[in-house]
Image (tube, rainbow, N blue to C red; front, side, top):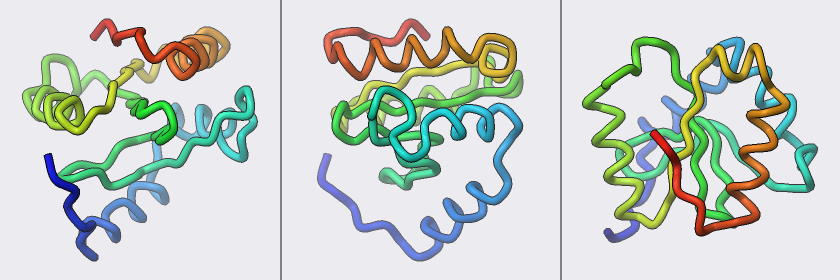
Length: 123
């Protein structure tokens, strides 16, 4: 899929998403920002095509999404995942509760996926 320039509207939407992040996104961002997690560079609320990824490790082509219950069986998420896969990204999803209740396990999983690009997400 060819690279599409990011429109000003999409860039502004990503900025607003950064300002309005959930508790779980804030908590995970405190671990990911500034290469705090195993010296891995992450960006947050990054426009990719038609979508905005919660967190992106461009080097490993890994997108990390933090989902609330509204994302269960979401067609929008299925479309997003399919488009991101076509673009060469893997999409790793965690529930808000996972981040809030077991942040260490979430971080360990993210490190494993960044370090081993053969791992494929389970949901």
